Image 1 (cartoon, rainbow, N blue to C red):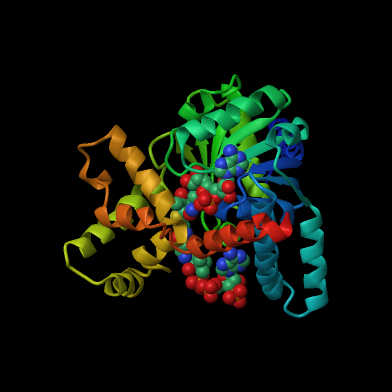
Image 2 (cartoon, helix red, strand yellow):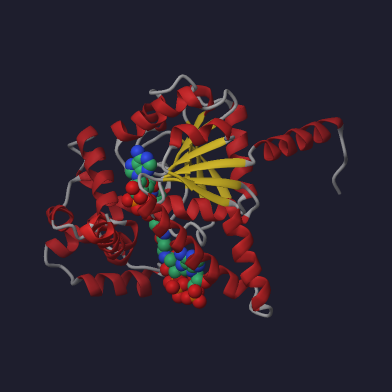
Amino acid sequence: MAFITRQNIRSLSSSAALRAAIKHVTVIGGGLMGAGIAQVAASTGHSVVLVDTSEDILKKSTKGIEASLKRVAKKKFAEKPEDGEAFVQKVLKNISTSTDAVSVVQGTDLVVEAIVENLKVKQDLFGALDKAAPEHTIFASNTSSLPIADIASSTARLDRFGGLHFFNPVPMMKLVEVIKAPATSQQTFDALLEFSKALGKHPVSCKDTPGFIVNRLLVPYMLEAVRLHERGHGSKEDIDVAMKLGAGYPMGPFELLDYVGLDTSKFIIDGWHEKDPDNPLFAPSPLLNKLVAEGKLGKKTAWVRNLLQTQNVNNSPENT
Ligand SMILES: CC(=O)CC(=O)SCCNC(=O)CCNC(=O)[C@H](O)C(C)(C)COP(=O)(O)OP(=O)(O)OC[C@H]1O[C@@H](n2cnc3c(N)ncnc32)[C@H](O)[C@@H]1OP(=O)(O)O
Ligand SMILES: NC(=O)C1=CN([C@@H]2O[C@H](COP(=O)(O)OP(=O)(O)OC[C@H]3O[C@@H](n4cnc5c(N)ncnc54)[C@H](O)[C@@H]3O)[C@@H](O)[C@H]2O)C=CC1
């Protein structure tokens, strides 16, 4: 039985205040991860603005969110499909889109960045947002592999900057790694933990170390599978089947690389290799490099091709 003490009341009310504090969320990057984060935040009653670089991308992101919500609704409201449709429409109403990050952050409590895995690009974005966002706004990066402290260094709000690392597909994966960089305040860290719980996720606390917990283990494993194949020790199909049936993983390493994105996986491994060139776990893979150079990025390739086609149509003389 829990006794109500003054300390309990204090901690309950401060956690309720933190939960209440994050109402409006700006998600930057409407790709694989950003669309999922926006969907989950909107599904849990947050008001969300999703930002990307073009209206075409945002249209695709919104379509993807709608399709994913329908999958969720199909299960959640199996008995009452009409409630499922109402749920989808209600969640979509919580999401608006913009191509102007600087103007939308002016009224936001939390920025979650999920753009390309490149330190300079992330720093430039946060540097610009820092000047426009209110004092209380917390900044968080969904980076897979970059130090949060390095990204935060482009801002003057080191205490209000942390990591929120979600997993793909965001609507299905329960984990969020919450990263406390050396300068992240306890209040910010607690607010990020509370926010993750408010999304229905299970947060774990991480230090600001390369790959945090999951990717420090998962990325070397996926790359070792590629090397195993490059050495001629197994076909891609057999390696995938072996890890699914022999180790109980839901996807084999090649399926997972395809799912995460070959470009993102390459950004991660190249960045770590640059910092720690003697570590054989971080050795670049010729096969991965070749596929990325050919524009074969995995599951997202069809999405990107589709988008380029749409842009070509929109830019064609008939449409101008
Ligand atoms: C790189 C990084 O920084 C970090 C990372 O993210 S690493 C990657 C981490 N992710 C993983 O390891 C994913 C491993 N894979 C899995 O867990 C599972 O394969 C999976 C959840 C993705 C799919 O599950 P599955 O049973 O294999 O396949 P599938 O039959 O397609 O899906 C089952 C149900 O999940 C749900 N689902 C799957 N993806 C969904 C999505 N994007 N949105 C909504 N629902 C989804 C649906 O309800 C689906 O049922 P329907 O087909 O009826 O719609
Ligand atoms: N793919 C994965 O499985 C996971 C990726 N991540 C991380 O999440 C981040 C995003 O990854 P993905 O969603 O996979 O990438 P993605 O390539 O699918 O999407 C990135 C999106 O950001 C947009 N973008 C780029 N620069 C921008 C800018 N300056 N302003 C606004 N939008 C911009 C792009 O147009 C694109 O739509 C990366 O840091 C990645 O490491 C984290 C967890 C899992």
